[in-house]
View 1 (cartoon, rainbow, N blue to C red):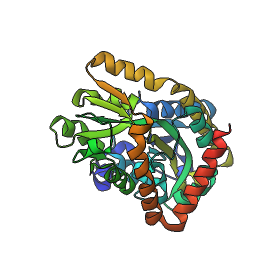
View 2: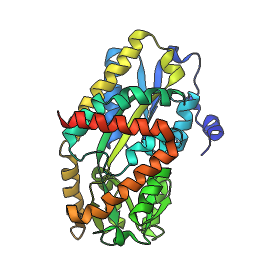
View 3: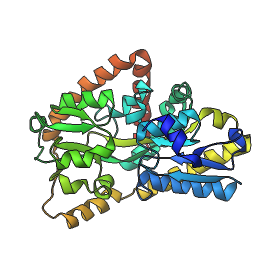
Length: 335
């Protein structure tokens, strides 16, 4: 789906007048209304509509195309807001790939919540990088520990040898799974279920809630937690739109973002365990493995190689972001 087709076919998205005068603000995201990004979006919408004269129109995954489509529309000003993972945004902002350095982010959810709320790297350093792409970065937030789902058991990197593993179209994620021993296979999300079903790929990764809601457990047999990453996503606004708002309107947006963030952190408490139980009820023969420290050793060893690749891809800017994030994570660990 390209921008011209969207502009021609989606008459509901034709915008008239200046951004600031729009009564309806349009917000697209990468998941369904019932999933984490959808829950965040609904809380954001609820706050904005309760505290302003504006209406928020939500567009869940698929209604306006794939991730690349909604980002293009946000940059063009057709959308006022877009929620997208740095996994996709990394093609625009190479430094955003830092979230795919394995074992950088902790599995402790309380520490993660503090980190995303208080991080200088996120709340200051990334702002200019996003602005250079016409985007106002409003909030990054976690969606849960990533799990690998595969057709065969994974107890070490050797078990990923020759496994075609779906990854987002993100250069560093490709490097990660190369380092893990797999054959990384970038695919748009809409093709993943069918590709697993037909054995074009044999594995993929996502947070537990997403494994259940998208029924990926139907086409894989093993869920493996290696503790290597936590899925990160971000809410952004079109920069011209945001800069054209009054101070009061900007404050409503910032307050709505804060309210949605506090809500989603609490919403996710225990979510992975609840959704994993639903998977096991639907498919009792599913094998779930949490790797031991010894079993994680090869994945952790690969992390340093991926970190070096990240710095090679992004230079001094990426190295500075990485060091600031490590400092922010240490601060968050101290509570």
